[in-house]
Image 1 (cartoon, rainbow, N blue to C red):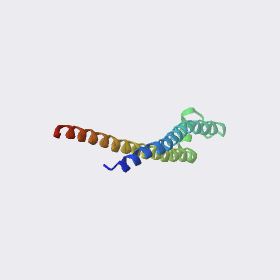
Image 2 (cartoon, rainbow, N blue to C red):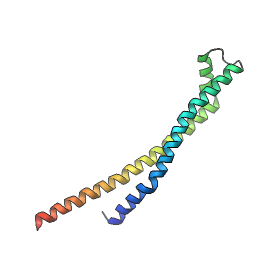
Image 3 (cartoon, rainbow, N blue to C red):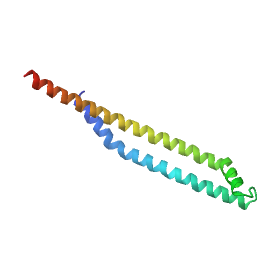
Image 4 (cartoon, rainbow, N blue to C red):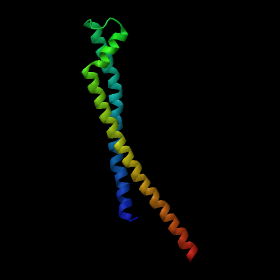
Length: 113
């Protein structure tokens, strides 16, 4: 593998590690927000009389378009995070293959001398 490709892989890890961290933070935020959204929707369902029990309020919350929208946002965040994660894994694998190839080349050079 050409050294420029290894340098590019290392640069990619450096520059995209931050993007991955941001994507993970966003996903975590949305997971927690989903819980808050559900609680607010349940509270509203109880307050306006659409639900008379916690189970009914939970059903109302899950069916609310705002909750469904929060789930769609979470879906997109997980996809973005996983896309970045696997790109970082692939860059690391390129580096590992290069490292292994270089070690094999050194062994071959020593044995043929």
